Image 1 (cartoon, rainbow, N blue to C red):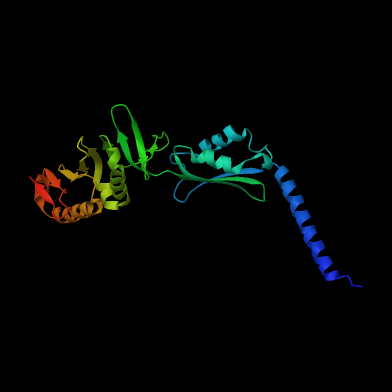
Image 2: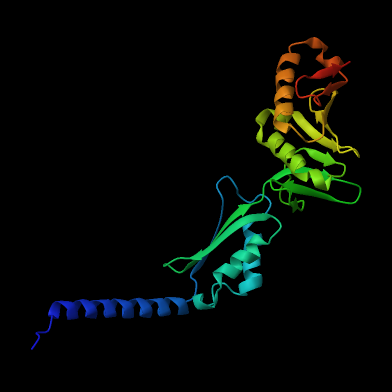
Length: 241
């Protein structure tokens, strides 16, 4: 007759007990109400295009009373989808913690240019998606006029991003005009000359040529007499007085 292995029986008992306690605590936790709502923004972002109040209003619209609803009734993934679909939010994280808090972490979209036409005004973000203008904050980014050619949109977005991400270009370039031909003309903040960029191809090389030209040209007092700077040819910069 086999003897009972009390060691194994005790181990099984402990496992069953742990499963029971975990299930019990999980059930009790899900039936509890949230004690607090914490809203935070990604590093460097604080109440720019979207405020704490706006985020809180979105919560109220979807949960009615966030501090009175049971945790089990809240679909965190659905809430994230609501925030991610907001036209000023790039990405959100919604999660609950053991202490009973509902946490919402927001990463806002980053505007790279401000598009202006006769009947519409909006920002474009780093991915080329539209962002509405905000009453809370106005971004200092280049103004774009003219129609963006759909087939070449990636090239334009690449150009916009490179300008905004470069400290010198961001301060230097104030406007971007897209001609009916699809060619781009840039405007400099400090001088009256037009920068003939051409089609948004070889963007990196053209901007590099412009920066090199500008660094050299400002040492020459004749730079103020230039009417145009032609960057269309990637192997040279052509200046016209």
